[in-house]
Amino acid sequence: MSHIQRLRPAFKLAVSRSTAAEMCDISPSTFDKWVELGWMSRGYKIGGLRRWDPEKIRGCLHTLKETALAIEHANTENPFDHAVG
Image (cartoon, rainbow, N blue to C red; front, top):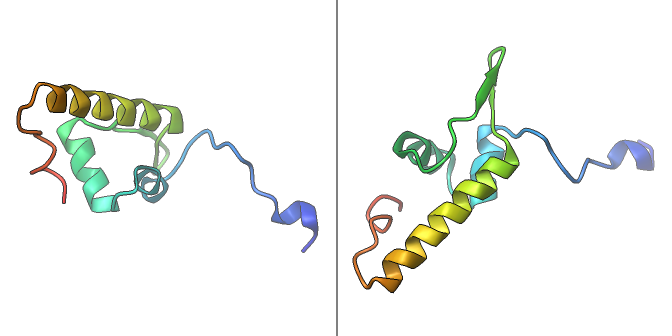
Protein backbone atom coordinates (compact mmCIF):
# COMPACT_ATOMS: atom_id res chain seq x y z
CA MET A 1 0.00 0.00 0.00
CA SER A 2 1.46 3.35 -0.97
CA HIS A 3 1.79 6.31 1.39
CA ILE A 4 -1.01 8.17 -0.41
CA GLN A 5 -3.45 5.25 -0.07
CA ARG A 6 -2.95 5.22 3.71
CA LEU A 7 -3.90 8.87 4.16
CA ARG A 8 -7.44 9.62 5.25
CA PRO A 9 -9.16 12.98 4.92
CA ALA A 10 -8.82 15.16 8.02
CA PHE A 11 -12.33 16.53 7.58
CA LYS A 12 -15.45 14.48 6.95
CA LEU A 13 -18.66 15.94 5.56
CA ALA A 14 -20.81 13.14 7.00
CA VAL A 15 -20.29 10.49 9.66
CA SER A 16 -21.97 7.26 10.71
CA ARG A 17 -23.87 6.74 13.98
CA SER A 18 -20.89 5.04 15.62
CA THR A 19 -18.53 7.83 14.56
CA ALA A 20 -21.03 10.46 15.73
CA ALA A 21 -21.22 8.73 19.12
CA GLU A 22 -17.42 8.51 19.24
CA MET A 23 -17.19 12.26 18.55
CA CYS A 24 -19.32 12.80 21.69
CA ASP A 25 -17.32 10.21 23.67
CA ILE A 26 -20.50 8.24 24.38
CA SER A 27 -21.83 4.83 23.39
CA PRO A 28 -23.99 4.47 20.26
CA SER A 29 -27.00 3.57 22.46
CA THR A 30 -26.53 6.75 24.52
CA PHE A 31 -26.22 8.69 21.26
CA ASP A 32 -29.56 7.17 20.16
CA LYS A 33 -31.11 8.36 23.43
CA TRP A 34 -29.73 11.87 22.92
CA VAL A 35 -31.25 11.91 19.41
CA GLU A 36 -34.58 10.67 20.84
CA LEU A 37 -34.52 13.43 23.49
CA GLY A 38 -33.74 16.05 20.83
CA TRP A 39 -30.32 16.83 22.25
CA MET A 40 -28.66 15.70 18.99
CA SER A 41 -29.61 16.14 15.37
CA ARG A 42 -31.60 13.29 13.80
CA GLY A 43 -29.13 13.20 10.94
CA TYR A 44 -30.29 12.59 7.39
CA LYS A 45 -30.84 9.58 5.19
CA ILE A 46 -29.26 8.96 1.82
CA GLY A 47 -30.62 5.75 0.41
CA GLY A 48 -30.52 3.29 3.30
CA LEU A 49 -27.74 5.08 5.19
CA ARG A 50 -28.24 7.62 8.00
CA ARG A 51 -25.45 10.14 8.37
CA TRP A 52 -24.70 13.10 10.62
CA ASP A 53 -23.06 16.42 9.84
CA PRO A 54 -20.02 16.78 12.15
CA GLU A 55 -20.61 20.53 12.45
CA LYS A 56 -24.18 19.93 13.67
CA ILE A 57 -22.86 17.44 16.23
CA ARG A 58 -20.39 20.06 17.47
CA GLY A 59 -23.20 22.63 17.61
CA CYS A 60 -25.42 20.30 19.64
CA LEU A 61 -22.55 19.57 22.04
CA HIS A 62 -21.94 23.30 22.44
CA THR A 63 -25.63 23.83 23.24
CA LEU A 64 -25.58 20.97 25.78
CA LYS A 65 -22.46 22.42 27.39
CA GLU A 66 -23.91 25.93 27.58
CA THR A 67 -27.18 24.58 29.02
CA ALA A 68 -25.30 22.55 31.61
CA LEU A 69 -23.18 25.57 32.57
CA ALA A 70 -26.28 27.77 32.89
CA ILE A 71 -27.95 25.15 35.10
CA GLU A 72 -24.82 24.79 37.20
CA HIS A 73 -24.55 28.54 37.51
CA ALA A 74 -28.19 28.73 38.62
CA ASN A 75 -27.27 26.18 41.29
CA THR A 76 -30.10 23.84 40.37
CA GLU A 77 -30.12 20.12 39.63
CA ASN A 78 -28.69 19.23 36.22
CA PRO A 79 -31.34 17.32 34.19
CA PHE A 80 -28.60 15.59 32.20
CA ASP A 81 -27.24 13.81 35.31
CA HIS A 82 -30.08 11.30 35.34
CA ALA A 83 -30.47 10.89 31.59
CA VAL A 84 -27.00 9.69 30.64
CA GLY A 85 -25.02 7.02 32.28
